[in-house]
Image (cartoon, each protein chain N blue to C red):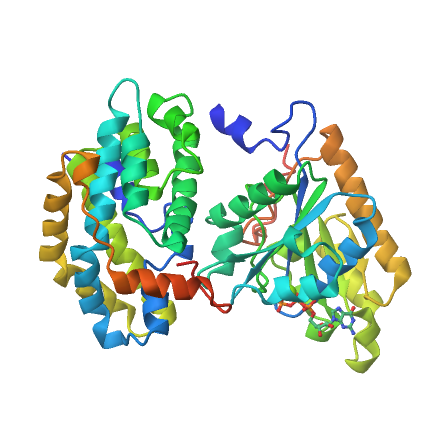
Length: 245
Length: 221
Ligand SMILES: Nc1nc2c(ncn2[C@@H]2O[C@H](COP(=O)(O)OP(=O)(O)OP(=O)(O)O)[C@@H](O)[C@H]2O)c(=O)[nH]1
Ligand SMILES: [Mg+2]
């Protein structure tokens, strides 16, 4: 089928080299997505060829923040207008973001890693695999210790869940360990990382995780999965679809 | 009898990036347009930019049906009639989404492969002509889709920029029907790229140029 070929991640301009890994960063407003992008650029730009795409309610707030952080040459940070539909731009119609990613690859490629920050939306906004090969979902302790338990597709299905701003936990009466435990139990074995931009150990773990996804992307063993727009159903009648037989 | 293709072409949910475009509404609002003037703006667009857009699309559809396919004359004629660079850029950005869809549907179709030879990129009407050929729609249906899309784009953007009752927008579109029909007829009557009318109003161009320098935007044009 022709669509198999078109959405395959290894669809390089130069035969033999897979195109850049496209890593989405989603999560509610203000949870620290741009800061994570800045951290990743700081950690990885020395070893990887990188570029960034931001989506905002208003064009370029995030792009300006990242440019002023000085973590990447400014022309490698591109802002996309989303017509006030940040959710649509990463799922229902990813055209504008794909254009931006392709432009960056064309201008500065070959690239290893393109980070795409979604406009801060709600717990249901996740990236379609038509845009992102893998995605982080970012919640923070300041949003309350219950968020992880509430679930939602990003929390349950993103490739990595970040519980961010752990340094703030004592000020908002949140038990980070309990929040991480809740998150783990919602995720069926998918990884969870407790992060703070002031925690070098956690930052190193984050960078290692990205390196490992990139390695799998390159050797063709990473299969993009779609967390979908909805949390998986739970069946009240006592059996599960996937593990019958 | 109309099939599904003309409906798909006029559907605002067609995933080709059109929701990032306001068909000139955001620049007009920045220049002072108020909500009560939206019906007048719709009529104005139908007599101006929409005619050029639809006529160029029909010319591209005809070019797509010839052997070999050569979009050069219509692309050049349209670019020459779109002097404001931000409007050409917006058209090329929208054309890119349409091109991606056409490639997905029929990568080997001669109407689609000919798009890839256009530098820097096919403008939206040219890409739409190719998509129309792939979807096998008539000139009239395609022109109608373009004209309808113009109305739909302005009114959906209005929900973000000059918010009010969404039901109003349906009434506005229906009220614009006579002008929409006239725009379609005028577009169909254009025989050659040289005859393509240059209708984009000067104010639209000036506002588009100003918009390109704005920093806080929802829409790219
Ligand atoms: N204490 C603390 N503050 C943080 C941390 N990470 C980010 N912040 C702060 O949280 C605020 C929001 O951070 P951003 O990185 O802009 O968040 P965002 O998710 O990109 O925000 P939007 O793009 O507006 O949705 C800023 O004031 C950051 O300085 C952290 O690890 N600890
Ligand atoms: Mg941000």
